[in-house]
Length: 191
Image (cartoon, rainbow, N blue to C red; front, side):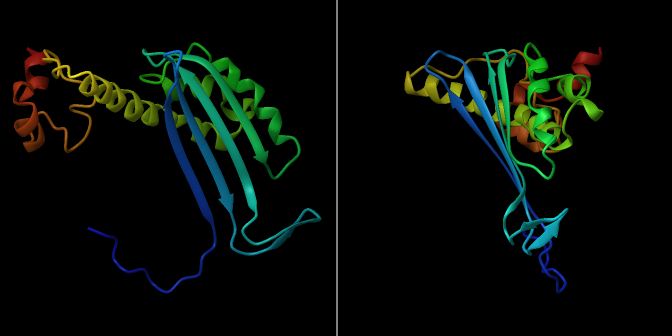
């Protein structure tokens, strides 16, 4: 169901965040993120003219991970920033090499590049790479398996996302339809 019609309003800010996932020829995975903030009006900021639609922030990240979602390489590029000092936040992201996109990812971000050790916007952009990685790896692995004509593996434990939201409730209709062997899984684990 779409959002209800808005009240009369004027555009004031646009933030676009996108992620793309790639399977590399060497077997690793690249997750790329892009964040771009623009204003629909021109403005003079600290003596510099910024045209309507020109970026306030424009930054990219590339996180290279292995099959276990452990970071083996990472880069940040701050293409447009409000201050000339901002790109100093690029090198500290390298401290995330060895971290895993999964449980503890937000804590790893805060420890490596939190507060004045990094950039708020890079942290926001990097946080979302974990979800993009989950979406990339699982679906692409299924795609490759299907291309090879292999059957879907029989699961004895539920995948990590089951039990993680309303639709994937272990007592809900989605699990009952597509993975009935996991109905009530959380209760079985408590016993």
